Length: 238
Length: 238
DNA sequence: GCAAAATTTGCGGGTTCCCGCAAGACAAGA
DNA sequence: TCTTGTCTTGCGGGAACCCGCAAATTTTGC
Image 1 (tube, rainbow over the protein chains, first blue to last red):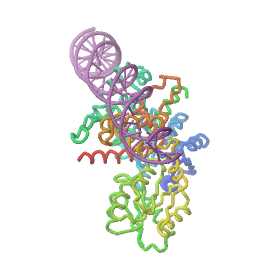
Image 2: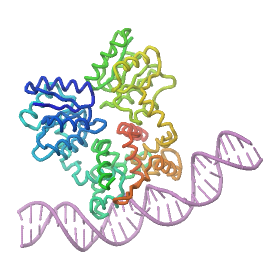
Image 3: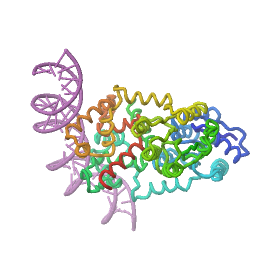
């Protein structure tokens, strides 16, 4: 049994190495990669079926890497190991998990014990192991309360990339008005209309404010933006 | 001699502890704090004059913590130790360094050797030690080429928070037109006018696009936004 | 299969944004 | 003092945004 570790921080990498050794005696080789690119190559060459993946690496982040790995071998078992549980990451992971794949998502702040349980759970027992806190975010992002639907989220990303309503309409094959409707839903869900009276009358540019709020709430983050930008550029052959 | 370590990752914290012990034999006590809040309190209580500070912690990030520490004791020597050299961080640090204070900024990716040199340089020799790469960002952000002036940067933050032109004008005590002028400068410096022909004619909402580009280039980041938001809310007594 | 609910679309208008043009304001230098 | 350059401000207009209203369409639930 082979395990591939993709993680850019050397300290964390060796810590993980140790944890894998301890938790999985049946594992005979442990490979390491220091960023997403190398990770993809390693996974391809070694045919490793078990991967521990950091999100948020420079070069190429974990979500991108996981996607290409899963595209090539959808039965690969991946345990995501991240510092943060930003909604943007959780959503990003959820959106690339292939049908029926087994994966896990644990935070770096969890105990040794839990990490080892997760390793065994995902790699040996083929369970999906999701950290409590991450699970919380997942739920919340589904709860209609202030959770965004996929449609709304997509619009949000397009707006955040700086596209005009017209451009979005074209991209999404919708009418201008529909895009604006979606935007209005967004504005409501993101509470953009707050106006704490005082000062400059709380005048907000709704479009910008929505994105700002999303960023502050971690519904969006830099890596989601980068993904969007890349898709945008490739979508128009560039 | 006392050294205070403020860092939320346990692995990095113990690594730092080790490094301090090794590099500074004259140091008799090493204190640790796991986030900015605790760091501030510790600094106040222990009267430590030497601090190693992570940026990007949950709870309260390093820049905030450093600012309050320096506000209370401007002669404190602080070595920033960060994963990233985002322009937003570099700018954030630069903007809070008191007149004549000694500080350092090294990346987590630098070698043990360099870290130890930096520790000695800042704490013992009272030199300012700035990592090569960080220095590069500093320079670039000054170079008039595509570096933003402070005025432009401020406007950028305001826009990114979602304020309207009018609100910004009021806040900055400028006329509407002046704000818009500054915005136009921003648009040029950030290359917002690119339009790779194909697709939906590359239609951008300039205001949003400028922010998107700034985020992608790390001129802005989430923590800069949070700072802005906090200032905004406090500015109008809220 | 049909009615209720949710989405999509068009229209119209009020507001904000983006920006060219040109007239003051202010500082530096000949 | 006069010139030159940079910065600010006002005016005006075209484009984009925000959104209420209502008809057309699709989806959902029974």
